[in-house]
Image (cartoon, rainbow, N blue to C red; front, top):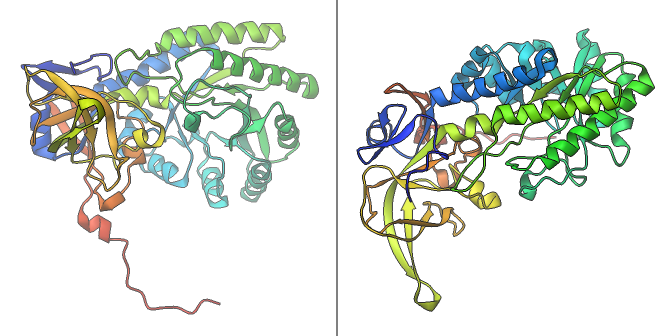
Length: 450
């Protein structure tokens, strides 16, 4: 497999037969920080934030809302600081993600709170710190937010998450806007309008607008177009009923990135240009002012910026039917640091990172070290036949959902995350230790529970 610039981060290149990221040799990084290792190209991360921020502002002008970085893709205190410094917002969907943002001193008025089952404690915390808005996801949550806001003596700005009935062209596990999902209020069933009426009548809620998110890793525009059209239709109905216009539409994210050769990517400016044209046209049709338009490009920012480094531990040739053989290449990580291939058959590519090989590629499968047959990182790939123990493999585009979905299955230690820029590297999330694994074990005397 050759180096593919389109799937690696902006500041990655093959130099003298070795992968270099942000001016740092991957062999040096592996020696200094160990493997598996998540390597974030800091310059690329900041470049992508700016690209989406500029695209939104340039195409929507005064009607531009906020770019909200989706924490679920990957967040740490240091990354939250980068996002804050860049002047965009952040969306969080749990108390833990909110805690990370607050630990980074992220401005609360740029925090958007998501989640389909927010606890009262999470809502109360969000209200107390003064977040920008809460995205409401159920009828019970309307009552809950209104009651907790009243107790705090505040009026809380909210959006309603709407299910527009769009079948996004992506895997079912990451498609979120068709009818049979746990998220949002359905337009088709009437739930959306019922929620709008309830929220509009709540004394401690200020209904600012509508939100939708059709899914993740989407490459076609049709779903975005249909969702936007339906949201504006609903906004027009709201205007007719309540004689005021909603201030904001948050159109979510889900823009696809390249993982393997042939994958397309979205250019931020082209995406926002097309979206702006659509929004203006639909608003004009319904005699509405163009509202603030916000977006949530989490994966599109984080995904391409990060490369995972693995060390090869063993190789094994397996004979298949028809005289075909497959080389199994086992690395020192696997499904504990990248569950996506096992969850929904996500595809990745890989290259030999520490040297050049002139040996012809053979049919290979990259697997992890977990006690699961399904612990497969890349199901089928051509890699040089001389790859062996001690070699380094680099898998690009692992910035979204790699470390954030990592687990301790088989009591594996979660890898370190390092940031590289201009030939320097620093740890922003340290590698877990065995002491970390044991820290939650307790020996407690039995207690009588009544």
